[in-house]
Amino acid sequence: PANSPDLNPIENIWKQLKDNIQSCKVFPRTVDELKVALSEEWENLDCSIFEEVVASMPQRINAVLEARGGPT
Image 1: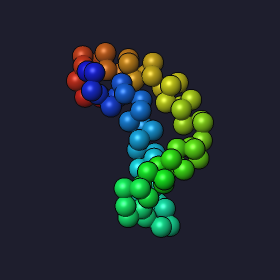
Image 2: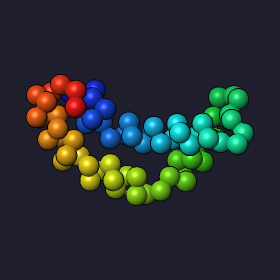
Image 3: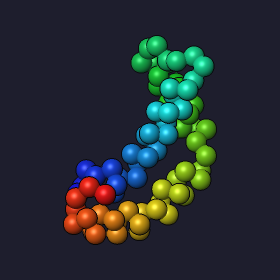
Image 4: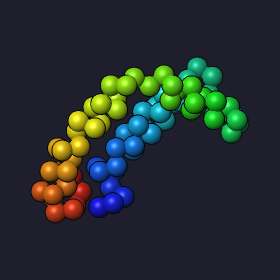
């Protein structure tokens, strides 16, 4: 399915960003602070997370096909 997190690799990246923001010593309290924190965390993401997500796509596609579009 088009909206499936299984086939939407950016969902994994958003989760990593969310986890990083939640573990900040000083939690953003305003929208502007959140924008700055997200920007900083985006720059600090290890490139390997992108490589891992892309490399996992064939397995994800196969799992969705085996589940006939259902949950995996």
